[in-house]
Image (tube, rainbow, N blue to C red; front, side, top):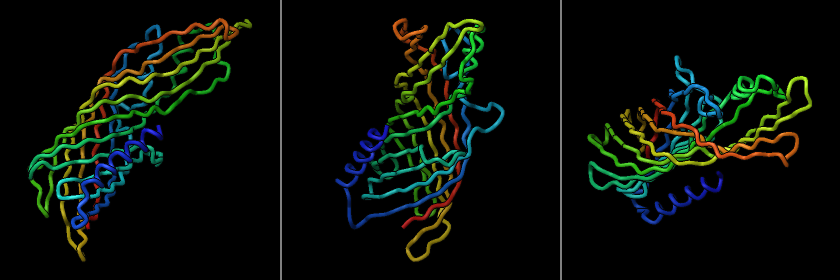
Length: 283
């Protein structure tokens, strides 16, 4: 994953530097605080475990609080690059949104970028407890893993109002995203018997299309010595139909008795609504 992130960063920065106009460089720093609400369609249990049934959501509450730290660099009047670091409740900086955007004229532009968002898959050991009543899990631990969703997108944009005082920009991200690979195992023993089972799961990557319309608003409050200070509001709605497929290996007693299967899980409706407010500095 680190190599993918580094490659994307180098690609975006090299693209921007090739069009740099040294007379019109411009930086913007921002910090916003917000909320995110995650909704994932859940299905009834079937023969094979469906990991997205165990994606951690709270239907009656907002799922996350967010802190977003942004850096924007203006290479020219037409080309900008945005790097946004996103922190959830755990305050671990392992989510991001990086993009470059080219302005075609005063109203329309086109951009491209990449995103990485984490999800928590939790308590899926209950599937084996319920589906294997004659066995028990030997370590007895609760299962959880972070599942990172990596996406790449293009982004047409429209600026209905964009002046020194007030800026409004609408973007419509069109992209592909996939959960990164994860692995988990269950070591089980039959009750009142010496028979043991080992279930090993390895998820596979599968890219699914998504849409992510965004609205970004900025209002300049005042200016001091060439530095503008203002308020900003961002909101977006990510939507996709996603599945988490995997390879399952079942071993009875020894690895020589292992059986392997590739499991295709059903696609779930997956959406994430976000809104945040904060301040920016521009010079």
